[in-house]
Amino acid sequence: MGTTESGSDPESSSNGWSRARGLVIKTLVLVGGALLIKRLTKSTTRRDHARVVSRSLTGEKFTREQASRDPDNYFNIRMLSCPAAEMVDGSEVLYLEQAFWRTPQKPFRQRLYMVKPCPKELKCDVEVSSYAIRDAEEYKNFCDRPKDQRPLPEEVIGDIGEHLTTIHLNSCDRGKRCLYEGSTSPDGFPNSWNGASYSTSDLAVLKNNEIHLWDRGFDENRNQVWGPKQGPYEFKPATSSSVNENLSALNILYQTSIDKPIQGSLILQD
Image (spheres, helix red, strand yellow):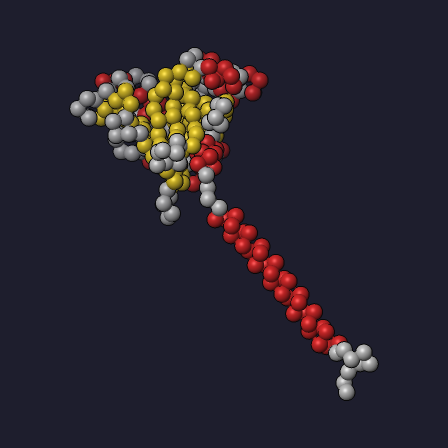
């Protein structure tokens, strides 16, 4: 009684199909979730770290906010960097220059940076090395030029000059503001500018492509003879206000710095 001639119960069949469909959906959700978790927890390789650092170093950045807060010790500096070549081992070569924000066409510092994964024997993630350029004049405003007016990648590699510094970066602990941070060894690298015996560099890559760079020179008695003493230069990505806003106080400082540079400024290094 209560059954069809075939002996099947439509309601029972419907419930069975619903259960089967629910089981299929639940299985798909579990499998999809497992794949997503696997993707999210997949270990990041050193090469991945190197790519992130390279991208963070690339672009136009200014120290405008820092110079506005503390004009006695920091200039508004424009830092511009872009890819220039790639080595056979996959290391990326970046061209980097720094200039006063009002005269970007006249860089006072030009470097080639080589960014690559740290060697396996070292306990770090990314190695960033800076080099002088054999004919720096040929590279002025490299990143601002059309690509067909820049030195070719093979020419860039041939123009890599004296090795200046190497910084080993590690990914920052969770909860810290930075993504990567590191420095040269405490003994630094040879440097003779302004009475120095050696120089050190500290580099931090922060979120939103912000870069903190602290270069300092020390004499043989470990007394600091150039570079800011208060802390690193804070380079933040360019905004329209970075270029267009008229900072009269900084303009005055820039004009006076030609004859009497501010003590401890980054630009005193070269």
